[in-house]
Length: 151
Length: 253
Image (cartoon, rainbow over all chains, first blue to last red; front, side, top):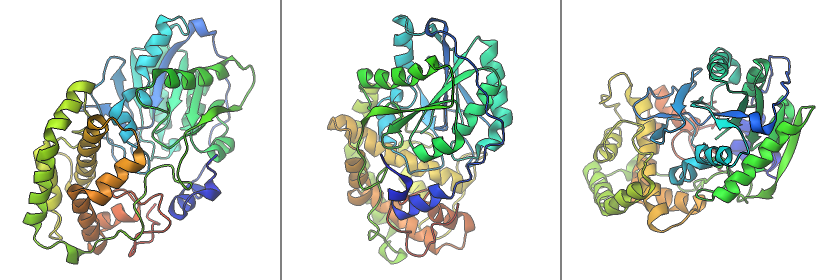
């Protein structure tokens, strides 16, 4: 396992100094059975549909993309993560095809129509309003399960 | 990401996340988490490997069957990283200065020639994948390097994109340029190796050299945002280096 203490100097100092304050009491929502799961992906890769407004460097807002969208671009401010993987295969970071296959195989009920992206470099505390708006949209289309994937 | 889980869960939505830094997961304690010992940027592990990707998803979704939390599980397979680096890092000693710029037109002509040579393979990659990630900047492929070249004189050029200032646009142009190269090479040579791609682009290509010259200009710049880009390792991949770029503190965050 890659421990923070074993990371190179610049990354170690940055990551170990991040503010990890959680400003909300932990909640627990009991999951529905697998065959009832309608899944929406939330990515912090700052991806959006080509032509959408790029994310600002510390964006608090989100972007929405449809489950059939494949023409996505990334406007994440950071460069410390590998981008060559998603360039080769979107499913490496946003596994829409895999979820569709799992729905077809009956492992889950369905894949949501809409999926969401945030700027992972921003403080999650600043994203609360946007996250709750996203949650409202999800509930409106019957989503009950959120798959959170960082970049 | 871990913090977002709490918001969704409090709205009555069940969440499960994957994450790369176990200490952060342990500190923030989202309801259900699968720790991945993978390089960052590879949440489902391996491109073009549906079997492996589904294995990750199934391991994560298994956590939805737990009745109490928070729960953290470890994905049983590792994708090794090199020396604690979760992404490619430039060698600390590979630093250019503004004295290395010389004739900007020569620099740009070399990049142009290199990009034209790659073009058939880039087009083949796009055709095969039916998508490209190049284009976040909104500039054409042909305009990417010349826009970067406009900064090498030490002045901030005008932005060609309405509503986006030149420096944020520069960030996207740099990433488009790198994507043009790596999309091409990963497809042409059927390789998936982030270290090799980083080394090839940043240490061996003419476009990489152009961007290291841009980095030199940024370090010497009076513009606070240009300096911030290098202080925060937002342009050249030095986040995983064993020390900050000379002339910077790496403390911009």
